[in-house]
Structures are given as C-alpha cells and as structure tokens.
Image (cartoon, rainbow, N blue to C red; front, side, top):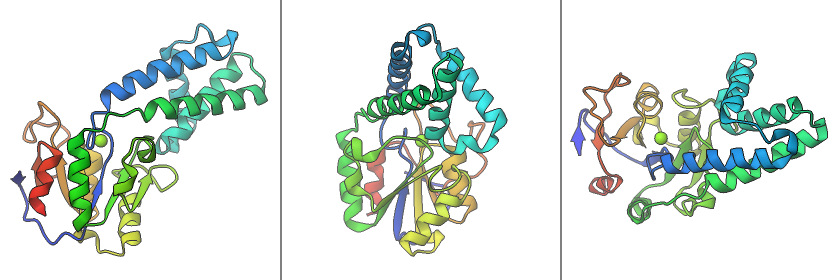
Length: 238
Ligand SMILES: [Mg+2]
C-alpha cells in the first residue's frame, strides 16, 4: 500500500466494479462476440452484420445525441434497434429485437468470474463500513453474486452522468448521509475514479492495473490518497 496523501477518517467505501472487483476484459470480449452472433441470427436480413457496422451505428448515435454515452445500456439498445430498422425490420420487430438482444447481452455480461479474494475482502470490509458500488458500465452485481455486500448500487444513466462527473459521487454521499471527505472511493481508472473522486472532495484509492505505473501514466492528473495492487490490501485499513 502506497500513500500519496494523508488518509482522513473513513466512514464508508464506494467501489468501481469493472476491473476493480474482477477482470472485466474476458467478460467484454466474450459478451461482444455472443451479442453479435445473437443479432446476426435474429433475422436473415442481419446475417452479414459485422462489429464494425455496429460500432459505426454507435458513433452515429453519439454524434446526434452527445450525452447518450452516459447510459451505455440505452446507447447499446438504440444502436441495435436502429441497425434492425436499417436492415428492413418493422418498428415493432426492431423494438422487440432490441429488447431481446439486450436480455441476451445482460446474461453474458454478468457471467463474471469474481475471485474468492474479492468476496473475502468485501465481506470483511462490509462488517466495518457501509459499501456502495458506483459504475459507468452495465454489469449487474445481483447476477454475479456481488450484490449482498453493497448498501446500494449507482449506475451511470439512471443515476446521473458517468464518472468523472460528480453526480453519482454526490448522490452516494447524500444517500449515505455522510460528508464527501469521509468516503473512500476505490477504482482502477485514474480519470473516472481517482480524479473524479478527488475533485469532488472524496478520498481515493487507486487499484493499480498490471504493468502500470502512476508516475508514467498519461492519464494521471491527480494523485490518489492510496495505491494498492490487490484489492485484499484494503483489509489493512480495517
Ligand atoms: Mg473500472
């Protein structure tokens, strides 16, 4: 555990999910493959669809609605719906197809291997502090056995703009009924997690991704209070 700023009193912890509590890379790779296959097989008119087509559609949606990126689930749903409309499906078919594709996406998205170490660490921490999850993504903790540790889960879109915007950090403090400076946010991303939390007055713990170095990181603008390499190191704070 490396200290860059003096840690103050801690009354609650908030956690990023993806790549903080588990390795999200294999999950996303598999989910993207399965989602594409699902849409290709949904209707003969979609057989030739490729990921690049889908990415172009996502970009076009963002160009016309620049705020859509805050809600990754709705962004994806609309991209599927528009893709189906463009392929000649009716409005009704495209809506039903997009809903079905999102169900499929959610089920693959939540097949996450959560390490036993993560369970053990969260179990210990939850005995001492209220824990909250704050995610920009669309993983569902209740589908991968992680929901039991958190008082509540905030997700970008329904609960405000995505991190590093302050919306969800402020909402977490309000719901916990705690001042921001008594909350330690834990995450792997130097911009969304560390800079976002520090700028709004929280304390920040950076969980360092493999083969990275804070002093060499191009996105390192603000020092976290603490740096750790493994989630289990947080037990030292108890
Ligand atoms: Mg993350």
